[in-house]
Amino acid sequence: MIKWIAICNYVPGKKQEYMEWVKKVVPILSAPEEMKKMTAWDNFLKGTPHRIIEFEFDDIASWEKWFRRPEIRKVADEWHDMGSDHQAILVELIYSE
Image (tube, rainbow, N blue to C red; front, side, top):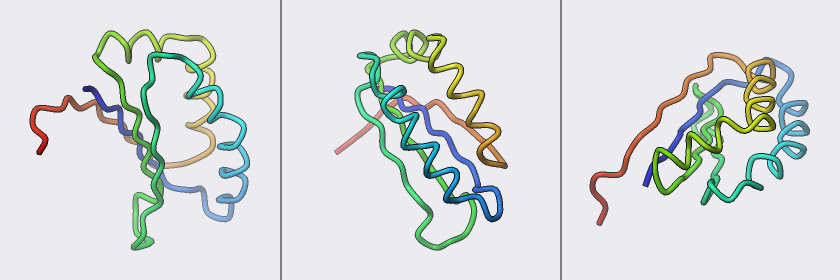
């Protein structure tokens, strides 16, 4: 399993705008068959990062296929305007109990 983890902060005073945008893009992000699961988190402690989103894929090839789709690239580009302090990591599962 591969997980792409995207992290950002809300732009001050624009969390509601971000959440409205999310409602529009979740169906786009989750439609392709390559993505197996998407989970979004808000930082319970109210520190930074504010938002953490996990996308699960079977393998790196599935992630690459999903990420290269024009509709996914468009959402990814928009995401950078909707938040701040963006980070992303791509991790591979090596152990689970």
